[in-house]
Length: 292
Image (cartoon, rainbow, N blue to C red; front, side):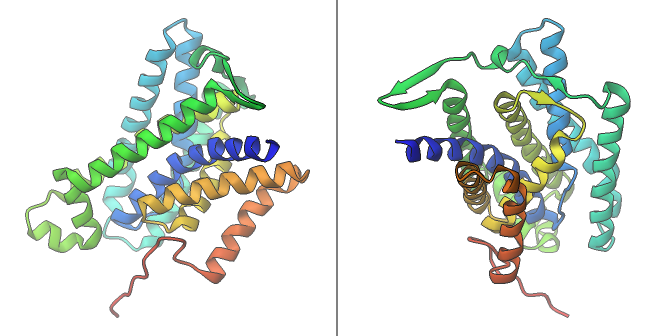
């Protein structure tokens, strides 16, 4: 039963990584950009929810505004920082993404201070535990798993069944051909950033409910681990991001259960190195050939 309990814990943590990794995969699949500012958008979402709840406003409103705030911020970053560099070398976009990440962290530190702030997680999700025999399930775990499954289902329908989803897939395959067919490239890319950021907003709330504190560097390591999950699953693949997130969550829980908690981060990045050496395309990634 202890093994089953650890399995549930791994699913909960992995689901959070998966939601964040989906943002990485979607953006990379469209414009081949590793958006390292994605993690810091999560940090902003956590602060928005914290400040609204601290002001005495309903937690439900805080969750909605946090997700909307992440979405708007991602769209602004895309228009201001990435759109002007769309035809530039990929390294320029990567450096810009890192710069945006540091900018968000330092602005948060200047405005809100460097000290961690306690996130009122029980205000968002009440402390309720369910007993299934000797298995203990918290309401936070149930909500996290349900949110991950629902988000994955909605995203799958969006990409596979809607007109915008078809446009996203077309731009991902061949941006030039998609533009010739009348697809609005700018709107499609902005929409992709918005969806990825909305998922990050959901992930921010769930992460802060599991680890109830927020600080300017909250999203830094979280974003890197989600990036590892995206690479592990096959960056650019939506099902792969989900699978990679769950795998990283399970790996962390196993390392902690074995008593090597100080090695958790090292193991995650060791997994990244092994994947890049053995199977760079990840579990479900496709090999791409470039014409020279």
